[in-house]
Image 1: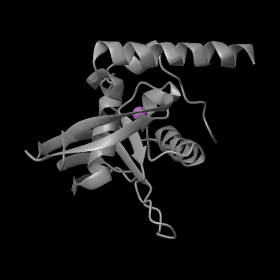
Image 2 (image 1 turned 180 degrees about the horizontal axis):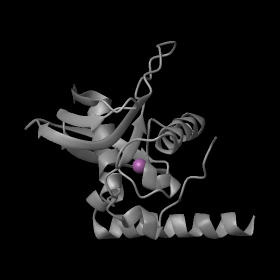
Image 3 (image 1 turned 45 degrees about the vertical axis):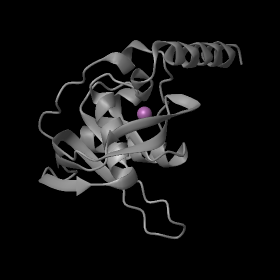
Image 4 (image 1 turned 90 degrees about the vertical axis):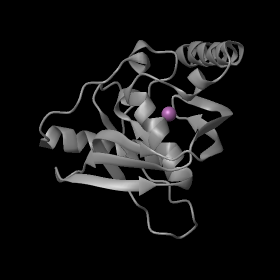
Length: 172
Ligand code: NI
């Protein structure tokens, strides 16, 4: 089932999310809903606070080659355990900040540990778009948005646009 995506500014997007306790069917259903919501948007990553749930859960799939098999990835309680000195700059966007993009520089490679959908501990290295995406999504779990890396003036400009968009949506 698709879930509505919160649009910035929203206090729920600024909260540090709580770790997920033992997995249960409700949490698995939430993760599946988030994947469906992400693919439908369409996007390559989505964090639980973006659907109003303040829990440490993210989903992503950064496969973008035409015809390639999808790689739906679900991470409960993800933690970055190592980062590279080398950095990478990508033009980032966010489903909670529609149609706004900015170049953000982050470590080019990260190692992440998380609990998967079956409750198993996983550890894996990520690079390229996957590395950017997983860092962007983990930021969401700490109440941080990509626009928080921008200058206050740029951030305010984007926030004003989003406030206007929300007013227009409320009227529609
Ligand atoms: Ni985002």
